[in-house]
Length: 543
Image (cartoon, rainbow, N blue to C red; front, side, top):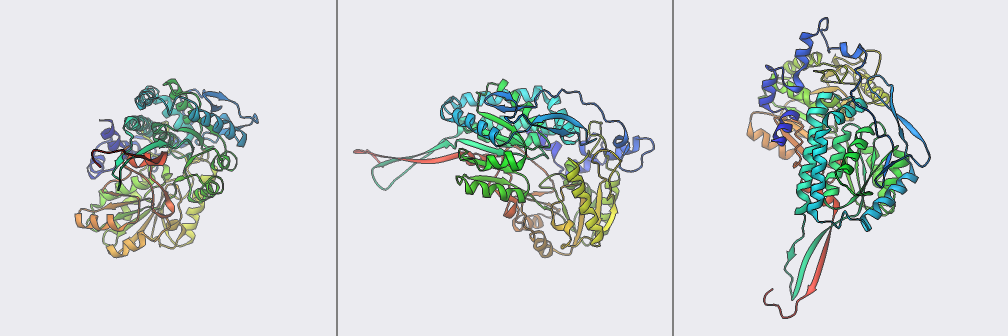
């Protein structure tokens, strides 16, 4: 039930998109209703962006580093501010970990793995701890959602009804795997007994991004802990709060000290120290492709630790000529603008068949104008602020580039209000493949609409990118869908839906979008070593 509920909330299937046009209850189609009900507002529902921000009903109780089961100050005593994207004001000052703190955290994780109970306890007991953690996540759903929204700027409704419940679902999924990880026996050409053991890899270093802080926390620790490993995690400096809160809950559930260590800090200091640490046995990183290259190099130059990378994307969303345009517009809108456009798999290249292109552009513009933007704690808001001033300025720079390169700015293209990091939903038409807005990962609310003439044309252009994280296909023809799903070089292809993130569905990219897979059974192999054990057999009855 939980899985079906979350998928229905997070996805935009044909049925749900069609229903959204007639139902104000659909979570991601509230812009029309909010606009019509707000007096004096005709575009973007901007009132919430200029009102005084809502004060979240949550306390910030955890701002220190978590090392060996204790919350402690950074060795240097330094702190850094984490900011409210709605205003730029300081939420709290958080301990700033650096290389010395990484050393302390790795030492705790190493001791917990080499000497502690976690890898040695029955897998069923590890399962029970992870299940208790999932229960505590549900119990503290509203507090976690409030911290996530306050620190990140995403709509509270999105955090509370989709993301936090999905964290609980993910932890239950991996808890279920804990006592089902086992090796095999294999025949040999001779009198030998051969078995394989699937062993935990050891100390896992994990570095997570700021766009989905709590979900990425779960994606990373779930398989690592289920397999019996210990973890040192570096959170994004923009969004440290929810992971610290959740980590405390995990210890409340019974996690032994030292199994999970969380260091808040910056990439060039804490992140680099973790990636290059000689006592870290495996590394997992989610973030930009450029930073992923640095992380991979540090891992290689230290102890050649294996690395899982989930990196950037420039995903095509292909609207075929047989599409129902109204439904396609709504799905394409969701594919791009979800989470303020700050999504690695966002459908940021909207390819539309020339037969329906003009109609699609007009309706995409109209839908963007109806999008409700404002304080993410306010009910019915679809889009909050961008994460920080750096990302805010980067997005506006790409918008200027689009205008200067000759694309048609249909709507948006500027900041919303004079406080915080809000940007108006932006739509470009007449976009060409060589424009920066069609090539680079913008990571913001900017929809680029390109025209194509046939399947051969769109496949060639869709694949003409260094990225290969995801793709979307919208068609009523099964033959067309089959042709495109096999031709597109991407780790995930969604057909007539987008952003389906069930716990069992693997996620990862081709090309420069990364290596390895997150979620599902495939993620377990990232955190296991396979050992072959061969024993002679004396006078075997059979071979």
